[in-house]
Length: 322
Image (cartoon, rainbow, N blue to C red; front, side):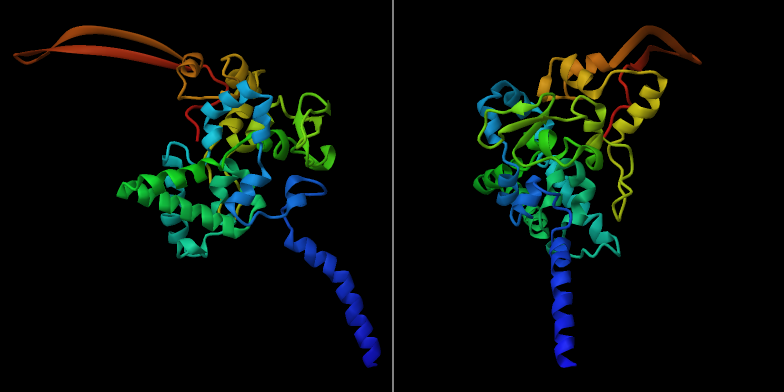
């Protein structure tokens, strides 16, 4: 009887081991995707290395220069304000919510940052909770150094935060396919765009077509339909894509995000919005009428100026957003 029991235990172990291994890798991608091949990143340095696109600059110098001017190149740091908002999210958000499981910054996990990083750093989903904690510690140290005037520590931590961004591989690999059951999973070593074939790069030897590269849904992954109901604590920030679908496309609009934010403006991979004067000019019409008058209140006569401003939104979505 003992012998039979032992064989049953061994058989169960052999059956369960693959499932246990899969459970540990949950969320890291399928087959030969970047995350599946390299596993979960355990440090910021490992995550940066996992999505290292620095070799792209060698052949795409102009595009890289455009990208460096964009908000995508500093999606975690921002102007410094974005990084500080992560602290606020934890301090005045998670720490005040009774069921978040966060009482101290050391208890922050990837899931607690997903309301922000789902868009500002989607590849954080391919990292362990230790990376989320390291990122928060970097932000806290960066802010303290700024307050204390410690330039060396400030610049060191700023550089770390700037290394976390929306780079080539996020758009041209990780997020290049949304319907993965029909179009497959983005593969390691492949750059996705509008062409397929060989790619002159040791790191990325192949090119493949992305069915969404020229479609607004590519941008919509981050620029929002509204509340992220898949999160345990739904948040709402960007809603431009939802507005684009229901207020612009529904009325017969035909242009894509890329056509307005990249091609018509000539910004390319700079992809600005309200911070760029050219984008403001293309997005808004102003009709201003001003005239003077005298206003009489009893025996008191006062000069007055009347200014009428009509502002028309010419974009394909509500503004501002995010």
